[in-house]
Image (cartoon, rainbow, N blue to C red):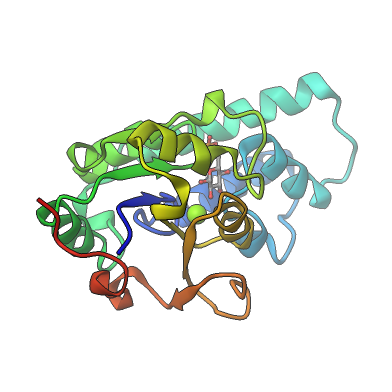
Length: 216
Ligand code: BG6
Ligand code: MG
C-alpha cells in the first residue's frame, strides 16, 4: 500500500476551473476579445502567466510585457473576488468523503497546486485542516509537467516519492506525477490522461482501498 496522498486542487478537489475561466472571460470582455474555443481544457493546471499567453491568442493586438503583468494582476483580482464566495458546497463530488476516509486511516496528505491562491481556496472550502503540507507554488521554479512541485510535496510530508499517490485532472499534472516517480490517479477523460496508472471520471469513483490501507 502507498503511504501518502498528494492532491492537485483546482479541478480535483475544488470546483474552481469555472471560476478561473470566468475571471479570464471577464478580462477578455473588458479588453474586447474572445477566449480561444478550447480555452477550458487548455487552461487546466497551467500557471497564471502561461494561462495569459493562451488567453491572449484571441487578442486583436500584441501586448507589451508590462501590460501583460497588469492583465494577469487584474485577472487575479477578479478571481480572488470569486474565491471569497467559495463554501464547502464547492467541493467536487467525492472530495469530502475521500479526505475524511484518508484522515481516518492516518494517511498524510499534501497539496501540489500551481495556484498561488490555494490557501484561500481550501479555507473557503473548509478543508485546510486536512493537509499536513502545502507545496508553495511561489517557491516552485518549473511548472508542471516538471515534477518539482510533487517532489517538494513528498519532501514536505517526509515520504519517499515511490510511496506517494498523486491525484490530478490535467495531462501536464499526470506527467509531473509520473516524472516524480509516483503512482498517478487521473480524474477525468482516460484518453486525455492516458499516462495515469488509474483513471476515474471523478473523485467519487476513486476507491481509496485500491491504493491505501489504515495505518496506526
Ligand atoms: C491551476 C489552475 O491550479 O492554477 C489554473 O488549474 C490556474 O487554471 C493556475 O491558472 C494558477 O492559479 P493562480 O491562482 O495562481 O492564478
Ligand atoms: Mg487541476
